[in-house]
Image (cartoon, rainbow, N blue to C red; front, side, top):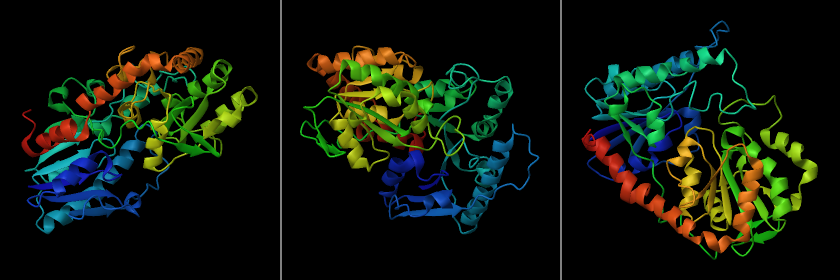
Amino acid sequence: MKFLFVHQNFPGQFRHIIKALAGNSGHQVVGIGEAINLKGRPLVHSRVTVKGYVLKKSESTETHHYVRDFEAAVRRGQEVVRLALDLKKYGFQPDVVVSHSGWGESLFLKEVFPGSRHIVYCEYFYRIDGGDVGFDPEFKMVFDDRFRVPMKNTVQLHSLSAMDNGLSPTHWQKGLYPELFQPKIKVIHEGVATEHIQPDPEAVFVVDGVALDRKIPVVTYVARNLEPYRGFHTFMRSIPFLQSRSPEAHIVIVGGDDVSYGRKLPPPMTYRELYTKEIKDQVDWSKVHVIGRVPYNEYIKVLQISTVHVYLTYPFVLSWSMLEAMAAGCLVIASGTAPVREVIRHGENGLLVDFFDYRQLAETVSEVIKHIRDYDSLRLAARETVRQRYDLHNVCLPGQLLLITEGGNL
């Protein structure tokens, strides 16, 4: 079979599927991604051909702000079409086209390859109520948002109308999409490599000259970027209260200073700087280690030495890091927001707290530190949850391959 995968940050969520398909000599796999994101990135597989496009920016300053994202998506879709037409000219006719619905790359592919089966990755459908918008009173929704936000779905609606099947990582994310399209959407997570990510009682992580291991109370927090969408402000505000109750604990914070989601601060200010200033004189910083982004294997060590791992999120896309923390045997204390509740059951495989209540968070973390052995069953149950429902090689990848190669019996 022939497969075309399209993702502006190729391979994106498709890495494991692409690698598995390319490992079969009977398949031909081609990828399309934005050239700037492909630069310097290692190949997913030697048998995968990848084409890069250059996105040209609009020179217009008059485009209405509601539709600027849509205009950019159309431009992106046009660049993808040019590459797709070149592939078609040289005889490449995919049996299956897999693309992400969010950035416009899938807008016109059905017209180029009408005989292909089109699978669209359905990550997040914006809503005025029940999602990220208006969730945090610290970042208030303005009246204009009620009109602007639904327009962000314009690109997706075009992609959804052309898809044969959809793919979404969680039931909550699928449930955000209009009911009209939900019967076509299959829920299969990208998967967690539990054979690689597992508990290690002997793990050691050295930071700021201190060797941290499981004998020392360590509180961990991980996000791609340190920002309010992932509860960074709540976590930072919990630190003074946590240190007053558990002064022996070390706190390790992993994440960058960019903004993945939500509003950016006026440059050069970052959310890390903003919330550090807020609690600056209330904290023993010798035991707070903000280490930025780290290589993947070092990140796994951080999880393996964790006494308590904190995961907070708006009602938004569920982070891989929460499932990876559970796979590593972490005791996860997470926000009781909808995407988290799909995975964590309070008192069974983790603990849930109010997203905004930093005092409750500090009290809960401190209680676990004081009685850590009482929570061993939750650690075991957390890993078992991931093994049963989100394991890459035994659950998710087989389901993805079935969907892509045979239609998943939809």
